[in-house]
Length: 146
Image (cartoon, rainbow, N blue to C red):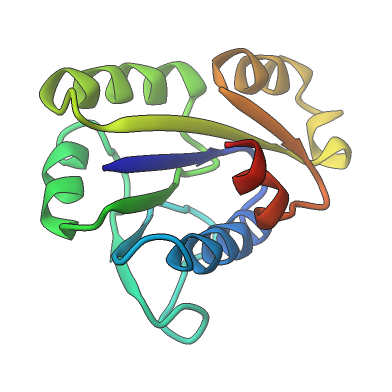
């Protein structure tokens, strides 16, 4: 089981990237699901016809259960743009403890226009990420690097 975690301050771009990543991943895996935790946007069936599970607010208490409920081989988590990177990392550490078979890859989506206003947040996002991707975001090239 694999979990792609999308972080960053962008919301609409992150929603689109989650859909693009899920579509690209479907070519190689049987079951793919999206967990939508975005605050300023949401991913709907209109944009992705696969499984979408919406979690509003805090992820820390129900992320592991939600991942298990998907039954998917690959899950794309679009994390809220308001979630502090250190809080997300603690949540992911607990999920890893509960699910050692889960391969987690954190991808920081960086839009230089937005992040220039929040340099400390950008630094944290890049520090905690396994991979940093700058806009424009391309799911195909990310999967080649993953």
